[in-house]
Length: 459
Ligand code: PMP
Image (cartoon, rainbow, N blue to C red):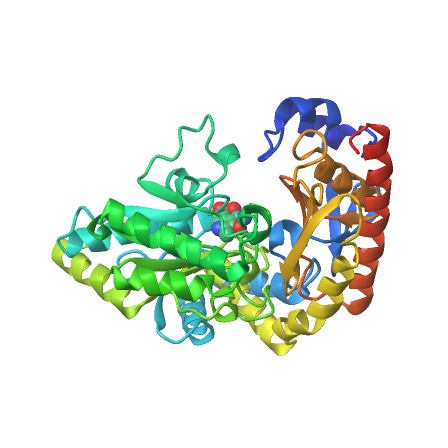
């Protein structure tokens, strides 16, 4: 992308520090400035239009031009632009949204705590687990179990739960007690001759062995994304999740389903836990909760978790945790309207209906020489750029996936490279035509990337 430098472009280079960016490279290359949105499409400051194949950051369910959300925000800004929920205060939007979330999430999840981001939500989950175990008189029950390649955020605790070197190296993380178990990705980590069922059994044995070795009395919770997202879009092997929950509950270990990406229809089911047949003790949502029009995350907990926390607040006289923006009225008003739209337009059903077209169309690239594995469910997918036999990346890790993503942008499709995987996660409002267009543009990018990789001597 060689965007013509203009004053905005130069100003960005001069003043901004970008997240997830090589800042020195940015000084040379500058930003791609997005100017406006329309449905599943966005237009940059040069006037070039793209299909947003990652829905922003896996998050814009209703597309980029939903005026009902703008109206909901404006109405709330005029009525009561801000209020908090500390010390028994409340306001209608957060009450209504909590009620709605309890109605939408699986049976048994009955209480909601709001934060501003997924990372804050997972930090809050860690603190809830610590707080409740202190309250229950078991102060040693504090460790978390997570998985390699998990993504749970980037704050000190959530960044510790994350299982990706790039989020930890030089940040002195992990900084809380966490054990990362094996990544449940059969294609990459299944052993020679091992069946998927045997792979699941091996991972479940690892889980139970770890719990026994470390002592169940030291482990507070297991956290996982039903479908792993930012670590490379990995769907779980058959039987994995129900097995995890059974083992954790046997040892009184809470199960946290991080549905920041999976929630609200992304996997073709309402929640990822429903897709994979388990009920967590704690469910974390964000992103599609407001379609990211406003920052918001929600933690929904069962009665066991709520009662243990509530009892301790009664003992201490307080729950000493909460953000200025917890349950922000504008975010909650937008969240409520967004969930109403998702339901009224049956966007979760749309994801399920379009799943075969989307997934089969991607799987049609299975023989492409750059592709090692294609995986995904619902409207989320990953295409891993690797040699089919050796499963090794071509050239320097990540290079080919980055090239495909850059070429896809030239072809008018935004997607994202997460390590060697090209990730797709389009808005839930996409149409069949949009999906066909995603396939076409991606196909062109893959072919051009192949020519490039050959010219670089990578294969
Ligand atoms: N959990 C998951 C599963 C995520 O995908 C993300 C963000 N990609 C987070 C937590 C962190 O959310 P945020 O970026 O809002 O802090």
